[in-house]
Every structure is written in structure tokens, then in C-alpha cells.
Length: 468
Image (tube, rainbow, N blue to C red; front, top):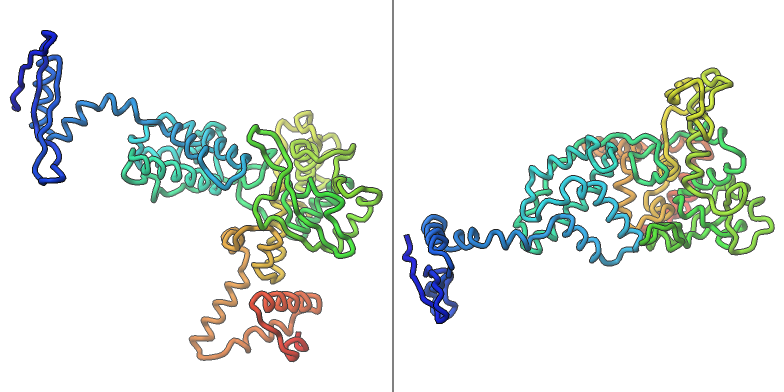
């Protein structure tokens, strides 16, 4: 054991010193001598034993571990600083991150010290979230779990930058399969897995809506606009002669939790969208007598359409009615109204009946946007055109979101590979398929080819144009 020196100070008190070598001199490269002093001999002797057993650094860590712990922040504190210092985001987005952390990781591991986070702690927290043990008690969708893990990974990266961790324990942790979130949320954008309706399913839902809201619903599904973009659309944004609307603003959250009107979600969200003919005809009577700053779509008594009210009084009842045929909807049933809790026939609304002509799925309002994209892709619209129409900042977002809706593209790719193996060109494969298309589909294909050629800087020759 190291020698413990006894020292008498000028004021008559006694201290005990332990000398040891730690570190090296930058000039000579030789070990540096240092020491630690104690007021109690027993403490000095204990430190001396630690030096022999743990080495200089281990003994110092042991000696000062109490003070070190006091200075190490929790994950909640690290997360608060990370979110506060984010740049290039709007205050509503910052508020969203704060809420996301609070209801997920903050609830489960927020009090964990930054230096005590391990992969096992992360795995358990992820499993707890998937099982509905977060602050909301909900089972999260796969997309929500991915967003939450991304936020945790960013917070842990800050822990590493501050020296509290030497690796990211969230890296490589597999996500469990998220659950489909039921349509019981007022603010449903990106809460769950997407639902893309067929034309028949859309018709079933559209027919159940009050006539006042049908133009609004057809605008959403016919343009792919977000809810927040549509409800603040003004008369001056619409040009019926050109069949276009300009998306220049959106309803969003402010830093104090209030709804405010600001720019669209992304820079490319500022865009011009060409309207289907049916939507143009819907808009004509709505625009009569309105000034440039007047809202295009309003509630029945005027004013902006409120998501909470629309969802509870219109969307949810219409969805239920679309899911049940008249035979399975008794006259006294109130499940398809804005007050299903007053239904005396059912304690809980019955599941979809599954009869022909009914809606089997449970789309959210935001799924009208996904449905629009799926219709475009099914019609052969180039994906960069879909990106521009939806206002995605990056085409990668569009590809990541909708690539699974491109089965025909996968089939064509497989055909091309097969023909390459056989040493043939692809002309013989796709030409008969084109020749078999009806006139309307052929016109759509010609327009899509022209758009794609323009995007690539190509010019279609007269022969190609005549053939189209």
C-alpha cells in the first residue's frame, strides 16, 4: 500500500497526503507526480488501497464519483437542450418534438442519467412503447416508432458530443412491428399506416357526406393537398380559367400550442396544383361573390373548418355509414351520427358489415392525400410529377412513401431482366400492352411520356408523337 504522509499545517490542523504518479509531462515524456490530501487518515488509507487495486485513474474516478454524478444531466435535460438548439425549423415543429419526447422517451427513461443509458435500456423502452406503455397508453404505429427512435438517436448523439457516452446504444436496435392505429384521433396526420382507397371505396365514402362538405373532400382527394393547406385556401389563390390553385400558406402549430397560419410544411410546399375538371366545377359556386382574401372552404355557418369538429361530427359518422349497408343499419341506430354514444342499440359501434358496396377499410382524413398519390401512380404518372404535386421537399420522400404502390414498375423491371437473359430487346414485351390500352389510358400515357421527356431534357420525334 502507498505510504500515507502526515502533515501539520500552519494553523495547527493535520492533513494526510498520498503521493502517486499520473499522466506524463509533455516536455520530458516522464510520469508526472501528483498527490491527494485528506482530513482523515482512514480516507487517505482507503485511497491508497484504491491506487494499488484500480490504478491512478480508477482511484480518482472512485474518489470523485459523487461529484461527477451531480454534474451529469438526465436524458430529459439533454433532450430539452437538443430541441431548444435545433436550427432551421419552425416553432411549431420544435413544439412537436417536445411533445414527442414527453409522451414517449421522457415518460419511460427521461430521468435516466446520460452516462447510464445502455442498449438494453433502449430495447426495453422500445418494447414498452410498442406495448402501449408510453404516456398516452396507446400502441404506436411503425412510423411513430421510427420517428421516436430518430429523436432518441439525436439526443444520444448529443450525449456522445458532451462526453457522457462513447457510443450510441440506440444504434442497431430493431423496432417491433407497429400496430395499426384506429381512426379515433382528431389530429391524424402521420399517426398510422397509410390507407389508399380504390375508386369504388372513395365513391362509397363520398356518397355518405353532407353535400356542404363534398366539394372540400373532393378537393382533398383530387389534389393531394394537406388539410392545413386546404382549410386556409383563399379565393385569390384559385384561377378557374387556368384550372390551378396556388398553395402559399398552411395552418400549423405555434410555439405556444396555438393554431396559426404560416408557410407550407416545406419550401417546395409552395406550389401550383392543376385541378381536375370535377373539382373546377365544384369550386365555381363556392367562389361566387367572394373577395380575394375570403376562404374558399368554410364551415356551414361560416368561418374556418375546424379539424376537431369536422372529424367528430362529419368524418367519423360518414366513415361508419360507408362501412355499413342499409340492411345492417337499423333505423334507430345512432352510430352513424355525431353522437354515437347516444345509440341505444349498441354499446360500441359495430364493425364494418363487409357487404358489397361498403367501405371495408378505415381511412383517416390524411389518407385522402395518400389515396390521391396512389391514383396518380396507378395511372402511370412519373414519380417526380407526384413529388411536385404533393409538395415533397425531396423525391426520396416520395419514393420512400409510395414505392410499394408501383407494382407495374416492378413487373416491367422483371420483364426487362428476363429479356436481357434471353438476349432480346424490350420492344416486343411492352408494345402489345400499349396497343391494347383504351383511348383514354393511351392519352394519359402520352401525357406522362411528354412530361418525363421534358424532365430528362429529351425531345420526342414526330414518329413517337404520331404513335402516341
